[in-house]
Image (cartoon, rainbow, N blue to C red; front, side, top):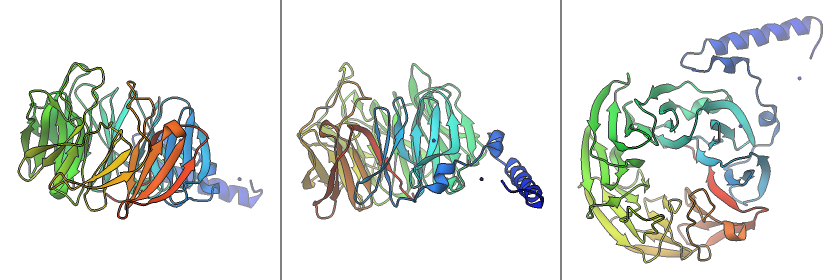
Length: 399
């Protein structure tokens, strides 16, 4: 995640004391001890990398140059670690065994910003805020990613769910907070809180609620085992799946499109269902369309392009560029070799990460990482890494 003598010593002590008092007085910081923590030295000493990528592997992280894909630094970090954009041009959030840790990818070092808690889960960026949901405690933390620049833990808006569960939350532009409802055994829906964390709306008709996405005009969706639950203009609307069990657990949205991209599964008894159909949910009409791609995909296969395109990386190795309005595949980019989704969700598989007009695709079976221009479909760069990667993400500034 420097000592002068004489009068200069006294000046240094005074300055240090003043800085400590200023940090301690900063309102909204739940961890007062951060004022006493020293700055990570390596963060200021390293040469910054522009537009870095971060890929996890068994035992650590690779920090990569976003253009050349050159490995800038290797960070040792045991355990299964997940990577998410923090919401600015420098940082990512790493989900570790102990909680969420903020990593300065540009300077290749962990900062003092940490949110401890068992089972750190979803990281959501929307409307200039980043929201963390800790599954083991049910705690929600909302912060402005601009406050990460100093390396300290940012001021947070905190909320704790009635019961801990595998959940997700998102703060809207007007300060409303949508957060899921459930327990460790059963998840039922979502509710909305006002700026003071007072409940103002609730919907409990979304069994197995999982995942979130935001579409154009701030239409928010969470997935259900029988469709999706939309929240728009202060109202909840249920979009039913065409099947009794039609699970949409992973979604991808775009501010440029009113249509959301989702997965679609129909077998509740499957150890691992490998679906070939995706869902496209029109948030204007609350209608759902299914599109069969003729190939399966995984939960790390969904993304959106710079113009709102729906992107799906298939197990046939093809990156499908889909028009969300028609469901037609507009372009097929040969990205990687054929692959099969592993039974264990924590095991590596090809992963798609999109930033601006570039799609990054990992190929762990060959220890390869590729980048593609989404407009032309051309491959930009490929590299071979020392170890097979698992998660793949990077810095993403702005929401």
